[in-house]
Amino acid sequence: MQLPRLHARFHPEIAVKFALFPYLVAQGAWLRRTALQLPEPTGPRAGVEGKGPVLRLLLLGDSSAAGVGVDHQQQALSGQLSLHLAPHVTLDWVFDAKTGRTSRQMFKRLVKIPASQYDVAVTALGVNDITKRASRENWLEDTELMWDLLRSKFGVRHIYASGIPRIADFPLLPPVLRWILSRQGLRYDAGLEELSAKRPDVTHMPSDMELHGLMSSDGFHPGPEVYAHWAKGVAAQILSDLPAYQS
View 1 (cartoon, rainbow, N blue to C red):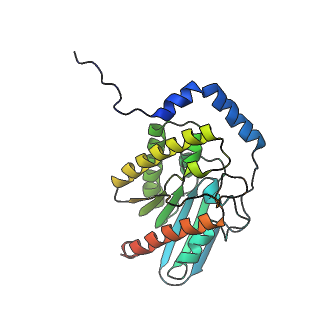
View 2: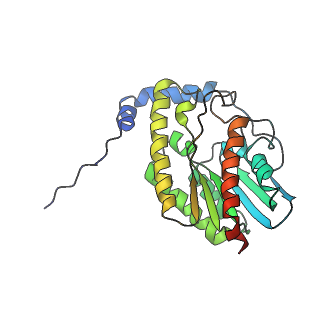
């Protein structure tokens, strides 16, 4: 009889999280009570603009996809994607995003809404899964279920999965909680990258921007420069892949 192997990798943030669990729960509750609550910005959540071949884009996600941290959707991810894509295509875009949304909630939302057809999807999810203590394995499972549904129900040909942002740069979070969540963010994003690499219909878009001094006034959401940088990278990748969507 062979004894089961111990897990090969030790994750120190998990040990710290268990050791300080009551403190961290209290810290999280205090943050929820005291943190500045920014609204989702005003502006359209769908539109058609540009000229040339039609590209149907679906933007999905949490508060970052909804643009929390800026005043208008023109400054947010949706508006900045339109800015970079509309000069090259007729962009027919829709976004479905909500503050606090997890990947499982996004999947359930897609199950309920009517089917439609899109060429590409851009997703921004994961931080709420981490803060709400979803396991990495469950999060990746929910993510792949969502990807499969985007293919089967919505005809999406390619998915651009935004990586987990640099939680270590979130000034709102107290040092210990920030360290734990940032370590988890790195592990979750590595899992997302590995999962994406197994699928030709998904591109992982890592969050490679240092966020110090560029966050919104709540210390948790992107500011306008972050949204602009994020959208520029995603749009460049979409335009590079464009011939595949026109075939």
